[in-house]
Length: 113
Image 1 (cartoon, helix red, strand yellow):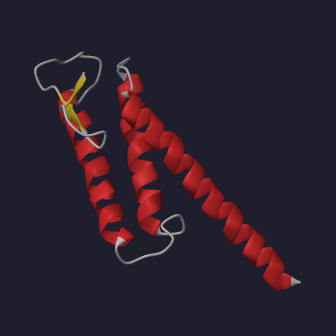
Image 2 (image 1 turned 90 degrees about the horizontal axis):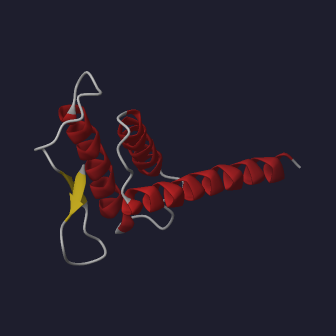
């Protein structure tokens, strides 16, 4: 189960290590590892924001999406709820990455004409 720290809307979820569902081979350790991957990907995106105009076409954006996808899949496999902030971030990242793919395809098509 996850808990949220009080404060700003940018608060990030922290895993509660006191509970285990027992429904996975790796238990909460795997969820912790996956959440750390999400947090690392977020940090990489933050660092890029100061240097890059468009993050949607950046490989770090794809890594963040993949990390979120794996974390949510692991939660769902354990029949744990997906925190609303994670769910919303995943939706946003899916939109950003799919929009970037559509833009690249459109540019490639325009270049062939």
